[in-house]
Image (cartoon, rainbow, N blue to C red; front, side):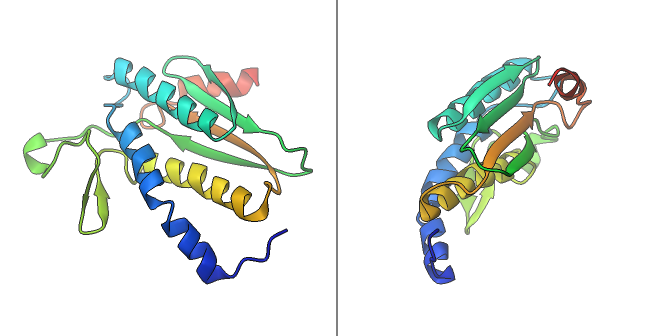
Length: 166
């Protein structure tokens, strides 16, 4: 196990900001209001799958809109599961937006775009943060699973079916 001082961890995390913003931009560009935006929901689920696969996860999609399930089994005794969702609330009156809700925009150090705080941003934070931990320690101390659904803001029907099956 690595013994990395906290200031050094903060520096390593700061160096990953551009990477994280890129992942967030790639998720934010899809309109994902369930059930209105079925095409965008499918495209975003595919994007989330690609992102997780790039970080070494085995990924499946279940249902429509898809629940994306990913796992990285490192043979640890313990498992961490992260829950997120990629669907969002409706964007409301577009005249009130200073930029497109479907394009990540950073102004004065803050990220704007539909889903950046609920819940695409936290999802990206988990992906990049867990990768940072793995890189600092040399290996993940736990197995990791992700359950990322596409209808949390609407009904979670597919998630319930996923849970019954798995």
